[in-house]
Structures are given as structure tokens and as C-alpha cells.
Length: 185
Image: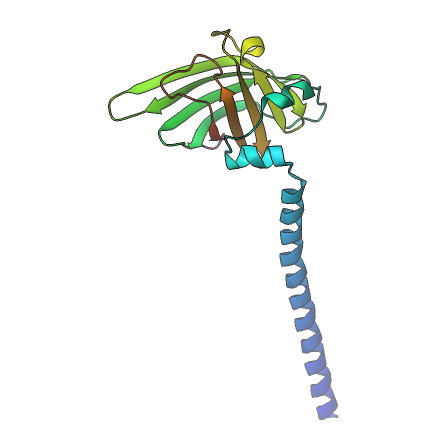
């Protein structure tokens, strides 16, 4: 009788351990599957934005502008958290609608001998719920006549900006490009 009771207890303990290990294994793998699925859903264009590719073709996406009823919330104060060499920036995004949002920023290129600054104020239009785009000649105040595009991509609470050409009043190596966070303030 005592032997049966002991065997029964050992069987129950083994079953509990198997269940706990199974739950832990499922939890670990479901997180990896979810992360993997999110990464697979990214388009090549979005991956290029995140990876900072300068071979990116932004202008070809300008024709994709469309209203977005369920766009991510881009509004807020953003500060660069990853500098490209000596590039930094601060950006305010406001007045978000289904069409897009207003943006205003100051950007820097710091060297040993001086600091160059630039600014950009304009309106970026949504091309999907995570991405907005602007064209320098049409959507940005200031220095018209110079071709340039900027794309704003929001992914996991990080704002990525990539440009081609000149956007806003820039010069001296100043660009908007980079990785921005609201938590940096």
C-alpha cells in the first residue's frame, strides 16, 4: 500500500514537471514565432528603411499616397537615438489626420570645427498605416526647387526617417535620416 502511494506521488510529480516544461517550451516558441511572423510581414521597402539603406527608392512610393483610417499615432516629440556619424535631430509631429501629419524639425551635423544646422517643416502623407512620405517641392516649406523625398516609418515605438535628395533647408552634411524615439526626451 505504501509502495503504491509512493508510485502514485512520483507519477503525479512527473506529470506536473512535464506540464510545466511543456508550458515553458510553448511560451518560448510562441514568442519566437510571433517575432518571426512580424519580421516576415515587413516589406523589402520597410526593411530598407529600418536598416538605413541608402539605395532605397523612396520617390517611387510617392504615388501610393492614400488615406489611412487606422494609422499608427506618429504625434509627439521625437529625438534621434542613433546618430549617423555626427548627425542628430529633434522633430515634432502634430495634427495627424487620415491623410497624414505636420512635421517640424531641427537637424545637426557636428564636426570638430563647427556645427551645421538645418530645418524642415511640412506635411507627410500616409502610404499605409505605418509609413508616411513627403516630397520637398510640394509638401515641405522653404527651399522649393530642389528635388527630395523623406519617408517616415513607425515600427515598434521607433520612428525611422530616410531621405533622398534634399528635404527642407539643409546643407553642410545635415540630413533628417536616422532612428528616433519619444523616450529620448
